[in-house]
Image (cartoon, rainbow, N blue to C red):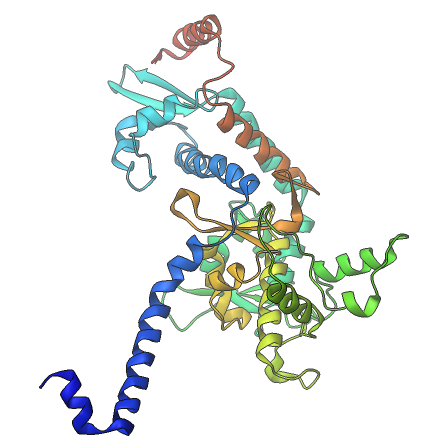
Amino acid sequence: MPWSKLCIKMGPHIFRSLAKRYHHLNMVVRCKTTSSQYVASRARDPTFEKLMDKYKNLLKVVAIQDLILANPRNQSVSLDFLSRLSQKLHLNRGAPSFLRKYPHIFHIFYDPNKSLPFCKLTDTANQLFSEEADAINASLPEVVDRLVRLLSMSNSKMVPLRAIYKVWRELGLPDNFEDSVISKYSHIFQLCDAHEPNTHFLKLADHIPRHHFRAAVEEWRVTQCCKEDCSVDETEIQYSFKHSYPPGMRLKKNFKAKVKEWQKCPYIGPYEGTLDNSNKYKNTSIALEKQAVSIVHEFMTLTVEKMVEIEKISHFRKWFGVELNIRDLFLDHPGIFYLSTKGKRHTVFLREAYERGCLIDPNPVYTVRRKLLDLVAMGRRGLSHSGSRQKADQVQNEDGETSL
């Protein structure tokens, strides 16, 4: 029976009921498709996009570097092996082409004994690797503090060890942190067996209090209030976060009003527990969202470069008690976070930590990594033909290898 005749027969009341259900179905379908559109419609920041253009190649360089350094006896890998991993490493034009783009980092040579071309790190790249390891070892007290703070944000004061492995580089941990940090500071950290096979939890010792920490945003508020030229009322900044928007982003009056209301809303801090267990504030949706923002904000301040991939931070969502979608949380607050989709991954930056594409308050580990990033950005520039030829002859004479 045609739709029009069916509606007449069933009557206006039933028609309105069907129309309402049909409209609800449309809303459900639309919500499923708007997630990617929400990401695509975000305001772009040219500074962060330009920085991410370099970082997406740096991540590939670091992945190859780890493969080269994985064998302590012979720190090199064959081009045949790297070619088989090209798709996994996102080397679109193949491994040899990618390696030749960065002669300051990789050196390709022919091993006559194995009759295969190999790749190893240049002296400059090896020096940077040593500098980073020294900087990490020199900052072990800061590393321990980061881990303690991270575990303190968990309601149970523990997280899966595999989640820590996801962000060990972002947190500036040594590659052998299970021995050099967890075992060494066994009075602070404990490894517990989980109910699942081959799964462990990293737990904070019971005698370590979780409430004596002050979040980074609270430190910022104190600094703002202590400024001589501070014109902001202390009551207005009591629950506020620092905001700075992408250039050219149009801020409508309605949006400004909502941000102003959101800034004044009280919330439970990342080290204070959950709203469900507290009678201090009303359990409102805004307060829950703001608590989630404070948790991911604090998490990002603990990272060395104040940036992290969404996929990695999502492993902590359950343990931090964040029930909201992490990606949407970042997109809802463009004045606090910036999300980039370059390099086939969603990477988030903490806006307040950067100025003109660099950290405002750099640390030793970041400084060394920035040098490697500069080598990536340099590409093939800065190479003289005579210098390259002389270096190739030196490698051939000393090691019996032929440079390619």
